[in-house]
Amino acid sequence: MVDFSKTSANARGLFFPTTGISVFYYRCTPCGMLLTPYFDPFSREDFLTHVYNHEYYEKIDLGYAKERPAACVPLGSKVA
Image (tube, rainbow, N blue to C red; front, side, top):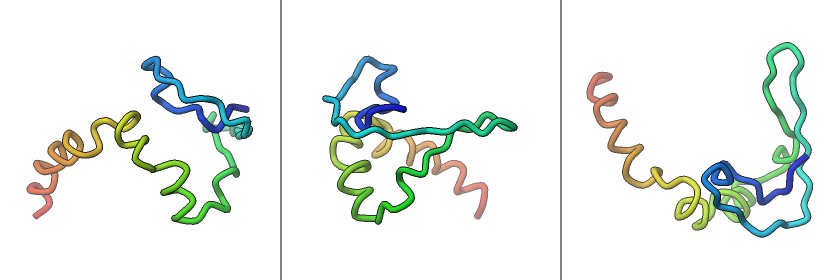
């Protein structure tokens, strides 16, 4: 179980205030994958509001706007 505020940026020392919302994860015994049903009822709007919002792109996924698209350009030219 983790607080909803936990992100991959915690590894870089960036922490958001706790929300008090518990997100329970379950580990698949055969493969070890972590899963949660917490987001199953989320709509697109829920994700945009609570997960992939401006703070996500400004503080967590720093490479979203420039680095990742630039890295994909060479891959796209190989497909065409």
